[in-house]
Length: 324
Length: 108
Image (cartoon, rainbow over all chains, first blue to last red; front, side):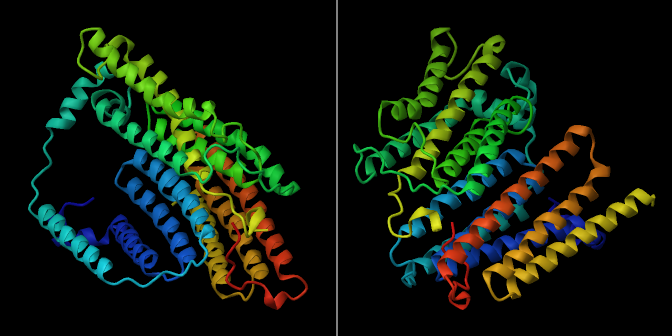
């Protein structure tokens, strides 16, 4: 991103990447406004998915591929599937006009934007201390990708709290399921040969991609969250195509799967004090193996958590057979 | 400018043209079937030409294979989705094609 003082320099206006960024920003604002103002909820959701994809391109432009992956997989993909599912459940998808709240929220957003612009305008060069500290400590982290080192080691406590929130969300989702103790109703069998053929070919590829993204996390963008999202996406695809999934019922298997990542992370975090280290810190020589083990279980748990949020929704009753 | 770069530019431009034409078709054509007809051209030829245009610039065989994989996955997914949308729309509309949902909503 160009420094604000560069904006006054005319030659920088010939820079094509600047125009690309401006176009992206404009498209982001337009899709956000369209998603908020569309009276048709289905249209709003579709525009929201487009907004998420644009946002992931923006993260790429900001040199944050980890965030771009997460945004594309979770923000646009899974959240989009969840919202589409929610819209299809609603009897009257027309939106009731509300005025007071949007105006207040809009005012708040514009105030915050003004504050951010002021802060950017007066900003000095970013402090290099944290980046330097990270670079110096990378040897102790056990991995070679900075984002993974921060998320799973140096700031593991933060990530652990995020995982806790996710686990709590999944259990609330299970509790809100209409009939939590009944086995899931029979799925609509699509028995569509074309869809079945695609799913049979696609799901193995998706599982391979999820494994690769998890494995890549130790040395390049990737990791448990992104891998878990791809895992969940393949589950959503299977479910929407009418395939039954073994972990869908509310039995103990699902509960164990949901809490495995949380428990593994907790154990790894508590192993520090046992060895005379601070909480959530690992010995440098075993940090790599610990992080990979925790991440593998996290990816599985995150995938099943996201999938259970999707399948916790009541089954589509009226328009059945996924749109047929 | 070497001829490879010139070829790349031609391929990328051709791919972009397919994308623009497909999008115009999606916006302007009257019903679901004709819109799908326009959209499948985008995925097949537009993305294919763009991937082909990017090929000479990749840093290694692995990256090139990933690009081809992206194209193949898009082909498989878009073909299947186009078929599903068309089939759902056909079954819903019945004999009266005029009555089919012009908005193309409801297909998940």
